[in-house]
Amino acid sequence: MRTIQKIDEMHAQIRMWRSSGKQIAFIPTMGNLHEGHLSLIKQAHQRADHVVVSIFVNPTQFGKDEDFDSYPRTLHTDSNKLFETGVDLLFTPKTSDLYPHGTKASTRIEVPGYSDILCGAHRPNHFIGVTTIVTKLFNIVQPDVALFGEKDYQQLLIICRAVEDLCMPITILGVPTIREHDGLAMSSRNSYLSANERQNASTLYKTLKQISKEIVTGKRNYTALEQNALSILKEANFTPDYVSIRRADNLALAQPEDSNLIVLAAARLGRTRLIDNIRVTPPTI
Image (cartoon, rainbow, N blue to C red):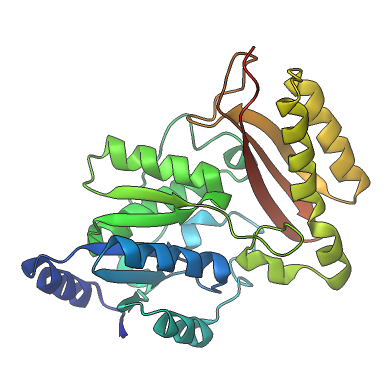
């Protein structure tokens, strides 16, 4: 596995692969890799000749008082994992190269209507930072296919929309969430959980599963289901940001006649912000 830090070296390597007619798969990450990331890599090997992974903790997607400084940085361990999974190239750019004019003066990419709801409403400018850095990385790596985990479902839809709107010749693939034995969605931030919090953390997924079961049985009062879920989470010592039932294709508010839904939630447990979702197909009215 080759590790590259400079953008011009990346361009040279990509040109070499392109001249040989090779297909490139790309997985952008912020490091502290877990089995969820490794599942993306396995899928990537099936989709392309070469697999590129980036590790970059992007400052523009962190808000005030968020965990940018304390976000786990485990490059040595991550590099070993990537080598073992057969990744061809690890890209570890510097902030000064990706934001040559500084993060405040950088050109920004925003997806209206998607970036300011749900997590975007609770983390202002977060998705602008995400879409901007992913666009930069796409321009550098020039992949044929890029893979993202479905745990970050809102992020996945935002990136799909940006790729479509900006006419990027990239196929975006969502990969199902990898979970711990008790259902907790794997996340780099799970390491923040204390032992007691970790035992309780799977309540978030269990609550989403309960909503899903109730929808499948025919319940259509989505507001009542959301409010009940919020109460359950509060009783379990979570501080919920939201529980919301939405259309899976565009995150619009769910209507009784909709047939393709997703239940999304974000909640804090101690200092750890957890997000999760579950797809559900209601019975036909």
